[in-house]
Image (cartoon, rainbow over all chains, first blue to last red; front, side, top):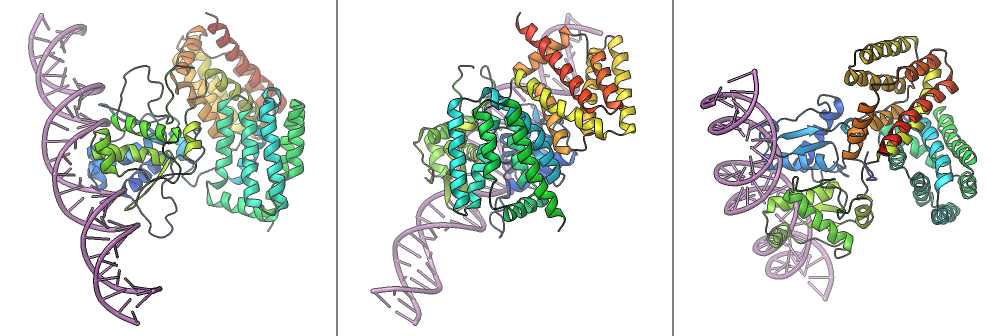
Amino acid sequence: MTQTTDSPLKLNTERSQANSPRLYLLIADKLAQNIAKGELNPGDRLPAERDLAQHFDVSRQTVREALIALEVSGLVEIKPGSGVYVLKSAALKSSILTDDAPGPLEIMEARLLVEGDAAALAAERISNEELLKLKAYLNQMTALVAAQKTAEAEAFDGKFHQLIASATRNSALQSMVEWLWSLRESSEISRAFTEKVRRQMAGPNIQAHEKIYQCLSRRDAPGAKAAMQEHIAQVTEAYILLVAD
Amino acid sequence: MTQTTDSPLKLNTERSQANSPRLYLLIADKLAQNIAKGELNPGDRLPAERDLAQHFDVSRQTVREALIALEVSGLVEIKPGSGVYVLKSAALKSSILTDDAPGPLEIMEARLLVEGDAAALAAERISNEELLKLKAYLNQMTALVAAQKTAEAEAFDGKFHQLIASATRNSALQSMVEWLWSLRESSEISRAFTEKVRRQMAGPNIQAHEKIYQCLSRRDAPGAKAAMQEHIAQVTEAYILLVAD
DNA sequence: AGATTAAATTGGTCAGGCCTATTGATTAAC
DNA sequence: GTTAATCAATAGGCCTGACCAATTTAATCT
């Protein structure tokens, strides 16, 4: 869970139709799965490049490329002369790749708590500049919703929440919000829920976001927290209603 | 902030000096800088691998590894048979990637909020079995502290907190607590922080953990939250005092 | 046993080669 | 003349085999 907005491994990008199953990506994927599956624990040293090459029946260069992909993704650390080691945070990062990702309700519950806290903190620390930016997002969101462009509107929804997290001046908090947001697309079931909600509600709730913005602009920490939690709780409610189908 | 010219890629993180200047990271860094500098605009195609190799006076494999690093970082897209293209979001990401790991105080602040919430949730959902396990951890921690084995005691400290997070029945929350805990070893400064606190305080604060356990055992959510936050605040306080040195 | 040194291991890089996919120009067909 | 098939140049994908530098481990010598 680094600051990079997208998922740790963007392996198999859009491979819907036998596109380019580049070998090193397959290898990287397999290794990542092994890490996520717990067969490789944090701190463990991976087999030597030469051994991996033999095991997967590929060249050493391909293995190297896979390992570099994993390193840049933050799953492993390559120590020249020593070996390749699984990082402690690897399990969390690779969890996005696997099916044991948190469910929609878990995500929403976590967001309720974390983003609530973040809103409260942000109310005390947000700058006027950021408030202006927030207002701008809100306006664009409003316009896009009015224009029925819900997809684009949701992009600003994300930016809105992310900016609040950023205003906490706490990068750890920011990363967590980012991560929770990214989880919406992490699993099949989450994607399905996001899609359903997207269809059900015609874009983000403008009033809810407006209320959050108002609280932040007057530096009302408890109010911001309450407004944020109310907002997320409302979305969660929509989730639950959809389950009834 | 350190005066080390932050590269767009988080490659070569916090190396004080000539640690492992792996060539492919240098190449990736240079290319990323060119992108960030605007010399390579989104949509542009990079020179061919063979040309880049000649330009940088390195082997083609090294260039390939650099390009793969850039691709995983989301800066470029590699189209087999066609070329390497700068992505639209490249400029944005190259600036985002510069930020480093959360600092000790950020970590503690995040823990204060997240673990506080987690404790409250856990109080409502923890099972008797888990309470027993928690008590067992507490006992072992106590014994180890008494025996001056602070290192082993801290291991149970971690287990204690992790079990509480687990008791929330929310895997997202659990992952975040796990991540925050792992961050203690993520950077040089955080390691130093952990080490200092470790030396200063003779092991985990038994009383604080006891209080948390008591609240959980009587299903007192607000109490558990308060106790947890008080505990973390106390550790943070200790750290701030140490900085005064 | 402890310190020192030598050997084995591991990642880093280079060289040259062959394959497949893409692309654009050439040519053939309509 | 326009379109379609063809072919060659170019791009990345992957392989073999080799050598270097850092690290680790084993052997050796106090």
